[in-house]
Image 1 (spheres, rainbow, N blue to C red):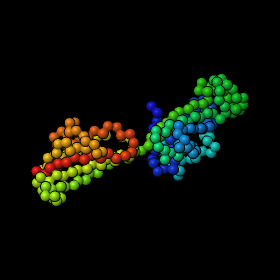
Image 2: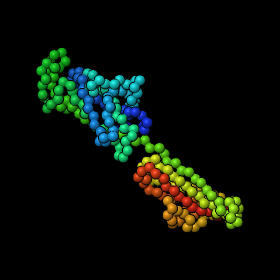
Image 3: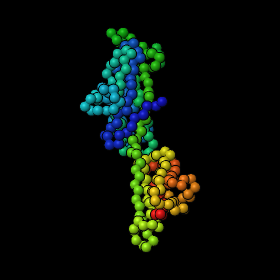
Image 4: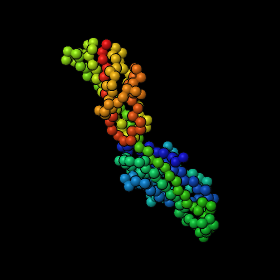
Length: 240
């Protein structure tokens, strides 16, 4: 499974966590590089994740100079953060691809770097080729949808009094801040009123009662919402 990190929206940069593991038998420093699949998402730097929480905190984490992770011992893991400016990104989620390579050198297994190992011995490339890469997703945080309900009354005498026989028109405005799967809006018909058959509208268009009114509740399935925007439902009841 590809790790996911939530874009916080107003943060200047988001730290995308990765783990660098030295699988060799000697100390090694590692050069980092990263790219994204969106031009609007920019890699701004790298940091050591000192508290291991997977989030960047300038007061805690250590920025790396020259995108190089200082030498870590054999078998040691180091948590790092790729810093990405992506608060304003729209559209698809951002894929961050990070590559790491041993600063001593890379190559086919068995490749030798004379005199560059621990203690002045030769450094020999292992089965990994002394390089690796991994991906993570930046997923935008989407606020929960909001629903605003309004009503107006029209009495038989032309007034707006809530009297027997008056018609109440309800307006439900749902605002979606982004893509939302399987959206459903449900609103019970208030006690003391009777639903007016055929009054249900969605975004101004007539919506049949079948499947949307069960005798006590208006229930409209909107399906998958693709992007931010409003959907408006209206229906009427009669005061008994």
